[in-house]
Image 1: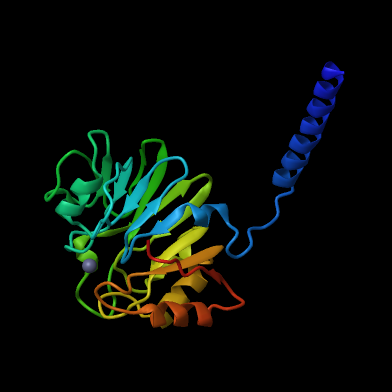
Image 2 (image 1 turned 180 degrees about the vertical axis):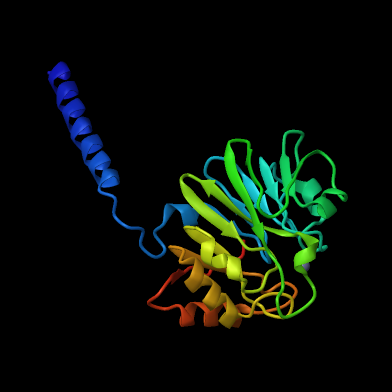
Length: 240
Ligand SMILES: [Zn+2]
């Protein structure tokens, strides 16, 4: 009797595990708020994201509250609110790889890979492309500085972090599934300009950033989402 119930349990277990596999294999398109990749993206304010999945990846660490060990840190340019040595220290271990541009690299130590727009590298098994990031209608981030945005692949999804950029013609050629775009105006694109950027890049999901810390407010993020309604899914992340 004991043996029989064991067999029944095993069959039930098999049925459920097959069901589960079928569900995963059906390839349903990701729904708003139900995307596993977005669940791996944690917004820590400004342009700081902690992205999990295969590796622990941080972007532009600034005002880090919790100590952590990053596998990879991506830094877009040398301004203090993006390239912050004291914040890097809070998440840097002996094996952490920092990917950044030359002028930020000068402020940091450890394992650093220096890149410029156009470069493609592999860090810790993650494919990373450095792409142009600059202002067109202001002078805070000129093209000559050679600062970068990044497109990197996590679990098959291409994630684009724009850095401090305006809406630039190169965006038409960027291929990204998830785009992290600044919306505050002043030093970077306004929400209206970020809408144009999103429509050019055509990601599955756009996430507004660069507001609520130095310039810009949640209203900018909301305007961005409102204008893209019915065109591109926008996820406004809660700051963690
Ligand atoms: Zn900047």
